[in-house]
Image 1 (cartoon, rainbow, N blue to C red):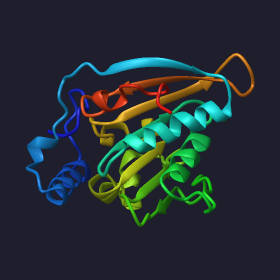
Image 2 (image 1 turned 135 degrees about the vertical axis):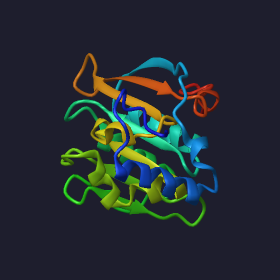
Image 3 (image 1 turned 120 degrees about the vertical axis):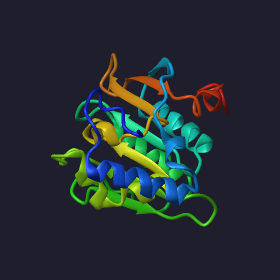
Image 4 (image 1 turned 180 degrees about the horizontal axis):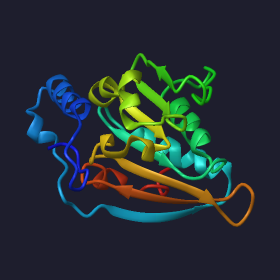
Length: 195
């Protein structure tokens, strides 16, 4: 079972989603199961918006097709600013990068590299509503940046990088907690010490 929903059984939509993602990834559905692993977490104190943008650029340099990056934190914590810097680092430096607050998803295609799907799920009432946004296609074929990932509930893949932003000591400062699943942990070595 792909979804770890406690003692609940997956819904028909969740089971169908698992099959579609497995087919698109060319993998058997059981390969996408959630495993009980201990994620690696660490905390960064970022002095200002420039430091947050630098972190986003470094994460973007490490991201690859099929990655899911869950951007968590309260309203105004910098999730959209992080996503904007991430997308610009991949090649949208001259393109406007609007917040998907009202559209729920914005898609960015790049000549050299995977497409990025930027989701803002704040207005979702049920996790299954994300299926209507094409989220399973994004999981299989693109990099997915997801604001308000808790709205996905059991549809959030086990393999993801969680980036939680919180206010810091000053109005521009942020405390960022990164929680890396096994595929992300080795890629985060040297983060924020790179150029």
